[in-house]
Image (cartoon, rainbow, N blue to C red; front, top):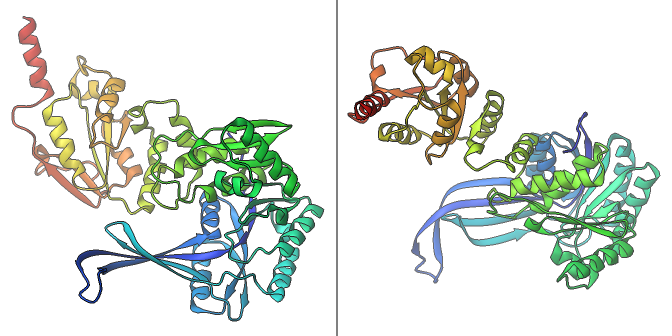
Length: 475
């Protein structure tokens, strides 16, 4: 894993855009033409293009600057406001008559119906080029590394790319490029490029079918752009690196692949982040693969945090059930992330010794009150103090493993205290759930949770009765 003992400063140069979504549903076909009529319910906007690289860098904990060219329009003002809100330092050059990129998608039942783009795709003017380079010269000493996020919208021209890379070398600053187009000579002298397999095949004119052709493509790209390293990203298969005439492939180990959208942006951001902290290329590749492994398990263009990467790395050697068992420290970080995603968190607790239908029914009802159910599990010592020296029947590790396997339980945290008050303080749940036998009694943690709910037990089902039945059978 990489070392990060400081906060990196990273400069992104590239094509900024706004991804605009209109969310709705369709119940009828238009009488005017054979097309769907979408009843719009919600409208959202997010940073797109180089903006997704910026979002990933910010979520990793970088300070980020961005240089780009926008139009003199309302979309540019909206874009600037979004960058400011996210915390990026934006240095935007206005070019009169240019359209700031905005891609609008109409979505019905989570499926894209149509997309329409409002943008300029021609190269920026000579005057804008000049202003970008002047701004770059002014800022270069503030940043550790420079990332080109080229979406082919005309901001990174061949002449501008050449000037920036040459100037960066004078200050010993690495330039990493997510390239576009067929002519990679425009990025000549960059530290390395991050084309995907399809892009690399087009630029190298080599069909990548096996290890030999992969190496040939890497060699051609290195020669064409005079790169320090040659890299090709292989989506969920990982990243290939040409180093000292040897091809090294670092595979991405993803638990589940839901969507590879934006994975390239995450890889660029993660590599820039790791290398800005003076990590070697192999460690940077491992870090980028872990980051990619996280984001391909999410839907849509996604970002990744250091906590998610650390958690993901540790999870690779665990079973899927064990992944649900968390420490106090881990659950606190997870809860913070879940709350940022506007998830409604439910908390309950108990011993759950000798699991039975009553337990499962209770937990299933508890989960129905929100999005995520966190279960506080009494440790063995805690159970002994509550139930007596002969309890629990099953150890805390066994009990945690069993309840973690239930579909309705998202996370399990073992606590050693007599009450889960300290754990509830860390979770700060939206809903606190206890059994109906607490009717009229004080529920520990009810002063912390926003809401407390009591759930009826299944008649005749309890661990004590199960133990008594077993004793009778033994006698």
